[in-house]
Image 1 (cartoon, protein in one colour):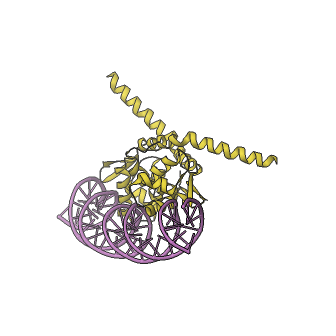
Image 2 (cartoon, chains in turn blue, green, orange, cyan):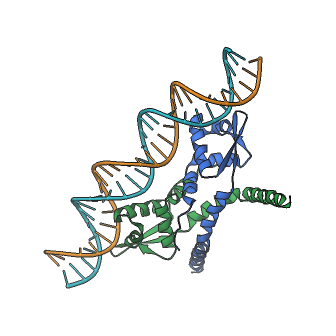
Image 3 (tube, helix red, strand yellow):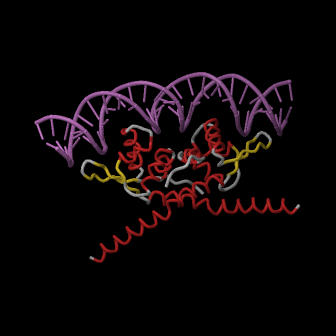
Length: 110
Length: 110
DNA sequence: CTGTTGTTCAACCATAAGGTTGAGTATCAG
DNA sequence: CTGATACTCAACCTTATGGTTGAACAACAG
């Protein structure tokens, strides 16, 4: 199993910040402007704008200008990429967890 | 959908570095020592040791001292946490991708 | 004991990341 | 036009991150 160079890096980096995950969570309820997103974040407007920029360059979020607002919406595709990456480990971790369960039940039987 | 404070942060941060994902990929083939892991990384021994330390503190990797070697092995549990987090978006993104597909096929029909 | 191997630790450096503020640009409201 | 709103950008600061080197230590080999 060898790691190939891909776009995973910006996606994982984008997801590695709690503020940005909060933004994603908010957007999963529907589109929102930068101002809407900034409100619950205890952070300046410009700070939020930066975070959204990072999410946009990781292609997790799309911006569309509507009047003077930037309406942001979630783009699910990169999440599917993460899922694919995880799936490469799924078989392995299922096996390992089964091992653990088996070990535990052997322990219980004694 | 609100983000609760959790252990996701160190896990995502740990996964956000390509060297660390390479280490995980290597470990998915079976346990390996720090030296083994350093070899394909074009990085110093100590650097690799640091990366492994980060993976250990994110609980993605376990170390066990065997003689003078530190044998590292993959711990699948945190990956399951990431998967759970992703699953909260799964329904949403499936719906969105269906929308896109539908849009594309409408486009094809024209 | 001596030397080599495997690893960690401390110190250091360069760059990136996360945040701020203040100025500047569109857009709408009156 | 004037002013408020929604944002972006540039500059700056602080701390984290990713890497290095060199010294130290523990374990095995001879």
